[in-house]
Image (cartoon, rainbow, N blue to C red; front, side, top):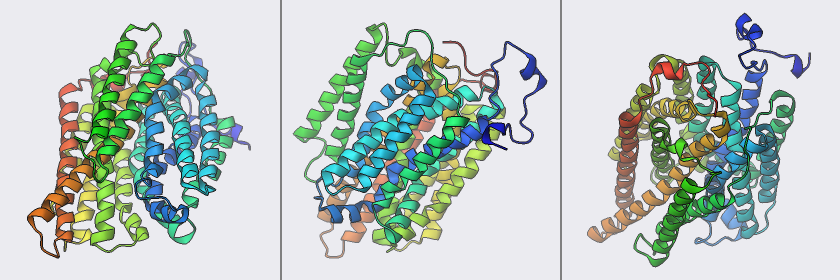
Length: 504
């Protein structure tokens, strides 16, 4: 038996109606195997944003990178990924999603090999930027292929359950894998590990994944792509500058980048509303349900990334954990995401997305708020573990429902750009949230040390800074919950309607 002979898993065969009705789109008999390939590729993209976090100190020492420049190992990836996702989504729509998927995998593998072999910081930063660029092509192609392959609402909910589990748990898995590879192999393997994964996914995708593309007018909006990419990059860079020691929100460099970002993004909106071939049709973001999903994902991404950042510092600096032990301390979070996403995929067609997003947001908010009770002597099991469980259960519900909502009733012509927007909102939320909360953390620590000038105040000052960061992070997720509560009006009958995609 070959892979081409494998059809649906047991119990998933086509119904007679699907086989005989010429008006229904044919169901791909290998769609579940294709989903497995897409899931592997998506996991690689998601965890790559966090896997280098544990490896950063080792890479900095090996390549003699300065403290001022070490941030680029993370931000070079985030800038290109977030800034180019919209263009990547359109390229996937127009050139073919399978082709874009394969090119993205090949490019990601090559960039990872370049980074793993880097002999200077500049080469490493360039490789990370290339990884982000190819991820910006790969990620929207992956999500839009799911929306095209799974037209049955219940099957689609299960497929998005897989995607939601990966989106939520990938960052924690990256921390664990980064700790293992750094401690037992080398920091370089945090990049080189992507090469065999990407090549395996590409080879498996060739026979298993069907191609699809948008039809009709497929001209590119080059001015729009330049404006939005430059504007988002400037915005992320402005927030990153604000987090640097000696800078701040009123620093001239920070204000200059933020002002430039504002001009570019306003110019993008004006251009998109006037051009006949927009990169981002305003109808996509002006839909209240899709707007709620995108806005909520941005705010939740900001709080989620901050949770990883400051918990990692707390466990290593305050609890005395090693990098490896800190990575494994996030394992319950990954497990909670998987469990919750699985439950959400079953509940979504029954209760609709609004209930899941609100309940998920409340759970995650309570979990982050509970971290404000951390002290210098509290234990992982008594405070960190319960918070991880609450946050992971909540985010699993939230990610599955917003992933589905972002592509519900979207025309196939716009599937790639809509999925790109979902990824963009999560990535930019993480980048902006990390910069914002890191700045607030540093300010809180400095203010505490001024008010408490005693010799042993450093540890207490860091705890105070964590409290501020976790409180603001909880506020961001609470804001996302309120936003979805107010805006989402999709009924469960809309989610379970067949097919979910409508003509563009």
